Length: 275
Image (tube, rainbow, N blue to C red):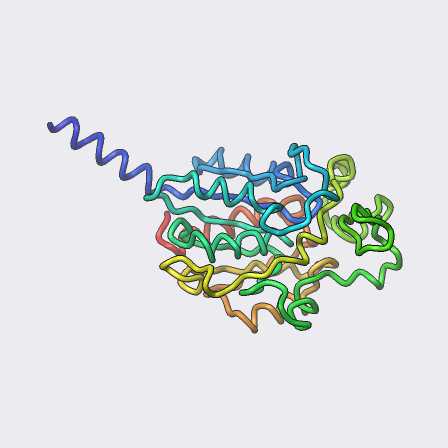
C-alpha cells in the first residue's frame, strides 16, 4: 500500500512538469524548433513539435489544402489525443498563432498557457479588414517576393505561397546564423495561403472553459520584417495578453536568439505555476 502511494505521488509529480507543444508558421515545419527542443530536453522538459498539414514531413500538397480546419488537423488531433488530465504550454510562431487560437477555442481545458511568438494573435481569426491589416504580412516594400501556386486554376485566387529563395534571408532570417538560413532554404515549403485566409473562429466553438480563460503570453520581436512590430502592438492592444515579453531578434528567434527565447519560455512556464 505504501509503495503504491509513493508511485501515485511520482505520477502526480510527473504530470505537473511542463509539456511544451511547439507549432511552426507558414512554410516552416517542426524542424524550425531544433535548437529550442534541444535546450528544453537537455533541461528535462517534455517537448512535442507538430508538423501541420503540408508542412515538414507531412506529404500533402499545399495546393490541395483549402480549409483551415484541414491544415490545422494535425495539431487538433494531437491535442485531442492527450490524456484528459494533461495541460500543455502551447507555443505558436507566426501564422502558428492562428493554429493555437483554434485550439484555445475548441480544447481550452487541455491548455495551461498559450504563447504567441511573433505570431498572429486574433481572437476570432480573419473576420474584418482590421484583422487582415494586423495579422497578414505586408511584404510589398521588398517588391515581388512571393512564388505563388494556383491549384484551382490561374483565374482563381492563389492556393499556396512561399517567399522566393533570394529574399528569404533578408526578410525572415536577417539576424540568424548563415547556416540556419541555409538549412531553412532547403526545407521551407509552400504554405496553403487560401486555407490560412479562411481561418475564422466563432464564439460558439469555445469549450466549457472559453477562449478568454486560457492565459496568454505574447513575445514581441523588435526587428521583425514579417509580422512587423506595429502589427504585433496592434494585436496586443486589441486582445491584451496577461504578459508581453520583448526579444531583440528577427522573425525567427528560434535561430537568432535561441538561448534568450528558451529563457522566456521557461519564464512563461513559471508564470503559470511551473518551476
